[in-house]
Length: 138
Image (cartoon, rainbow, N blue to C red; front, side, top):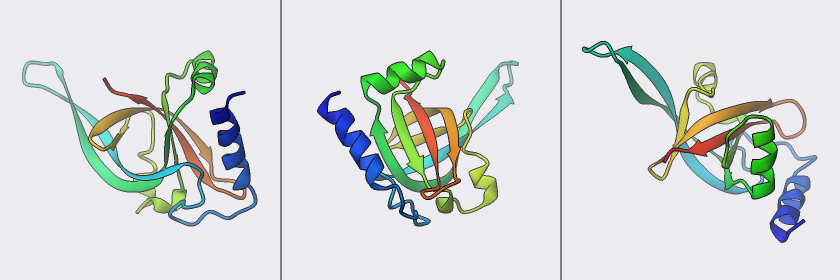
């Protein structure tokens, strides 16, 4: 286990037993504001599909790059991911927006797009949140 793994385990363990605020400020990791974008597919004039992303809302949460061990673990589960975003359910402006946190949509951070590859609902318990796995769009 390297120092990064130890810090990850310790930082996540430190937050057990605390209630999250609606902003998710108790979630471990680097806090950022990202934009959730929804994919819409329409038919083009030549019969092909046109993919358009529209902004759903900005939201704050915890964003970090996955380490090699985590990437290997998710690949064994057929999930392609290289980043993780943790977000409190309280940051959503409506239940409609919360329902758009799904795998077909994406997150944009600092002008870089990340496809949502997996969403885990962890809203039960002491630190309710959603764990979102992301793959950087190259």
